[in-house]
Image (cartoon, rainbow, N blue to C red; front, side, top):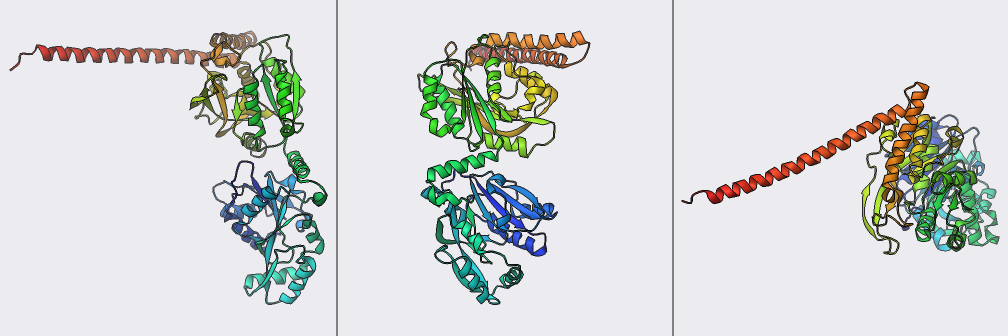
Length: 545
């Protein structure tokens, strides 16, 4: 078995299922085998001929209940085989991609073996050996085809054996007339190393299972170059994400944030680093991680004529980027490795409604010591474990998600504007309110982000704004509400200002009630102590018998 990590996601491309009884019988057989894989399959991509998408979806759901494995269905207009499959890097999102045709029966250890061998050998792909089931009827003809199309020198792991299973007889009768498989098919797999152990059971000469997209240049190019090329091709099939990071003279915290980015299982991102510190430490950090970054960084040295206005560097970073999706990651926060992959999938592939233009997830708050004390973790607590949706009413009460837990479409900026450049704090709340005024935000109810804070540091560069600038937060909270309410009054309308004002009143009454409850509780505890003392005095004064 492979020590599976978040960077070992596997996609299976099944190409293609014919729109016939036999075709769906073969697809059923393959899905049944895949469901028993010892290696977790993250995604199954199926090419379906005709208009049988829903039938294929029902078949998949029968073998993969629970939704853990994702299915992607493609309608194919013309019949064909593996040779007609598009580039699998454009179909699948996993780091590892296996291409098979319906009817192939992968043994339960097939993919754990192949993934392990790809990692061990450092190659872009590997072909698995297979058993070929030869029925009694037509067996001689099939054996000769195997020898011609897949000689032992090319597939040393291939074994031919006889079986009288009626299913294989029927398959052979169906396929022999159709001429499935050619020597040209086999030649495409010749660019891969072959794992000698048979890992698949097939009922035709050319049902070759491949791990990784075709790479004919493999024999003449070194493994590191091929892996970089494959990563580039995978990323091209994914929408790009600009990661905007503001930093100011916090190199140790910044390096931790960078490692969090490099750990992402999603690969098509650009790190837009807006550096307001302008020291030699940040360029040195970029040089240190030059190989891992692979030109996926845009460095923006930054001097603002509006110091301490946090929206200015964000907008500068947005203008410096060009990808269709945007997210922020402050230099002292981190992500789970699957943050980008899950968030992009939720926004792009699983959008619940056309009005959704952004997606958020949940956050865990981590209290830690200072950099000088080693950033030791002191404790953690959920920030918003009750976050199920984002409403204007809820957002007016409290800014209910963090900036680095939010991924949204770049086109939104042109419609609602960027972050305010005259707010030293709460620039994200200002932006989020305008966002939800116009569009919906969906919620992925998983903790994928971590908000780090150091409460003992209130007057150094390591301080968090919510810890160090409580007074500023309160002032600009009131300012934001007043500005919106004045606009409503000027236009004679009921708008955001009224919603914010009502929310502020409810928050104020809630705080008053909380304080009152605390006082009542304290009085009750004092009365309890007085009663206990009174009873003790009475007991002592009572005449003894």
